[in-house]
Image 1 (cartoon, rainbow, N blue to C red):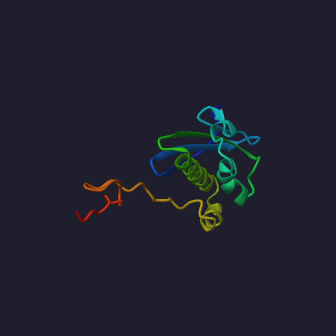
Image 2 (image 1 turned 180 degrees about the vertical axis):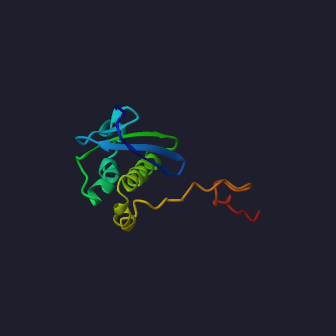
Image 3 (image 1 turned 120 degrees about the vertical axis):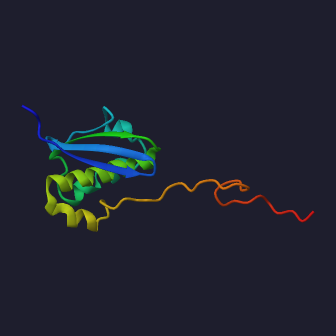
Length: 130
């Protein structure tokens, strides 16, 4: 028999995460590793578990995530949004709570492109009069 799961896709910067949730004991696997082994930076795992805490589902669901692209903070944000979207698919009544906590909002900030004649996106070379 196939296991019933709900899937949510999250994006942040250049990262994309596909998060699946199903009934279980609270396991959290990211790219075939436990979440603590994948996100080693202090506070990232607590940030990702924010949607679960907001709706009081911590320890009641098994979660698997496949995340690719970007860096650590982009992947953290992508998994967080994917988890929130999966929770809404599972139980649509949670939308208001998760939206109020800003877990469903896509953070659209991206790295600004470098412009010609500048050193970075906005930093200009030092002006010299002579």
